Image (cartoon, rainbow, N blue to C red; front, side):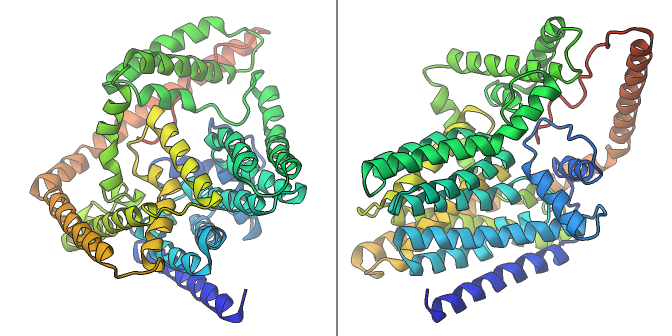
Length: 493
């Protein structure tokens, strides 16, 4: 790495850091704990205070937030959380740089890192205490570690890859299955002797399993069930494959009653949640089988256009409200997100169209296909679900600027066609931009807020009353009462 390379990377890091900090300050009116963010912040506070982690999600991101707050004085602070998100975002930028260097050289790494440093989706996501802030950097560094090992397989590189993938799994549990994909890719496409490739593949699997094992043991003692990392997937399996939301609610209630009858009196209180998740997972598989043979086409038709939507968690969590950004600000943000996402997706087509493929490219493509398959079988409609793989399109879009010749006749023709499609996409999305009808819906939502708050408080009081009844019942009996069914589905709508 030359002095010039170090200066360029340092400049990109400074730009990424500044862009995220300025964005957090400029959009300080947006609630940073909307949606699941409030629960992540709460669980981080529980860890910080030494209390038990009580959610069905992977504990990694909350642990990172708790550690950041511990370092910065030991007090709960959303500003510290946002600062941690900024650092994690910069690590993701450097990780994309490393992927570019490992696959096709430093110039590609520099261009891709510069793009993601200024990409509005990743910049604005640092505002919220949401899991993708922790998962994206660990994801890209996991892939970079595996690719680095594929170039010269060995036990040490396999150890590094296993550690990083294990950490990524503790942040986002569905990465667990990719451990075996990474090991297989090392065996098939890695360079060097067969024994070296086998040793590295084995190290990836064993070390990643050892990283996860302490949490698995904790879950066994906590729930008396085998739970490798988390138990959230069943809800997403059913939610993503029913035709209507009421069907999801119906199945949840039915399976809850069945699970209640199967939980032994000696089981821990939270074992009911694990059993319900397992039942929902089986129900989700049944729904997928019932919807064959057109299931995949139906899901792609329903959720595929989400790739061409503006994206960004912020658009669903405050940037659509004229009272926060003003009417002009809403439209500008909407068009800016739409335009940049469209151009990135279309330019990535040029990069993907190249005939040359490195082993690193194959691993990246396998990851995107794996991630897409996971979300296809579950719940794909949330904007923030794009973030764990949107960097892939940025990486290949950067190749449109790096590959030579840049201005050949074919590339000029492709550029004209792509720009025409981009303009068309902007026009189509402009029709969907916030208008009078949208403003009316927002006003109705604000008007109904007091009633919804009252209903929420009433529901909370009912839960407290049920909890008191259970405590009284346990006080009179040696055997515990029925398990609490609170927060069975913590998924972000």
